Image (cartoon, rainbow over all chains, first blue to last red; front, top):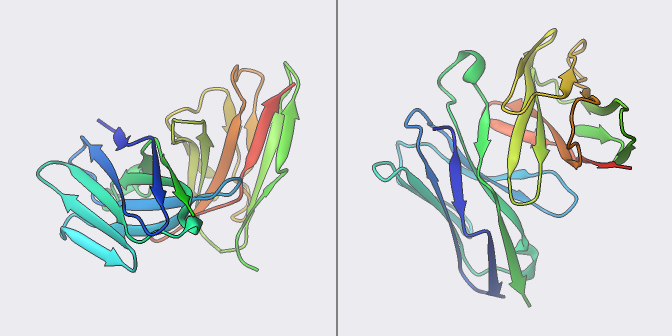
Length: 117
Length: 110
């Protein structure tokens, strides 16, 4: 019930292309859904995040769509330059649970995005 | 510069040996985490600490140990009981709902 399933494992797009990465979860107590971006040899960095009280959040070229009833959320990346080539992780957490659950992120398996010039 | 510093960047372990990975932060964050990253498996939580002198097991704590004697430091020891230690290890601290990660330590077995 703690799992977050992410797909696809890898994605190849041309410069200027669009990417969609999907995640699904089981635990309805999750209330915070971030996406992290990781470049080779580096730690992940927060890209964008959403709470379940909204269905969509956009920041620049990145948009999260959230479907509470389906327990799914997606990352849309628009007009990618080659610099977007990285691994993208979705995650989920019970941020309002308090106690020892607070802040523990459960990560998806990751999607390796390659943007060809 | 504020941030999370992990050292060493690369570490090699001999069979039967314990090794310790360092994690230091100067962000004044209370909570710190250790994750293990394997190809195709995402990040899995090893241990976490929400306050000095207290820590909790994560999902894959067997074969690992930690200490949290200072707010700034959260070292991870990979013991000889961890039979498959080869992985990329990531330390993080937390501010609000955001995790800040270090650049990781790649541990390999000789």
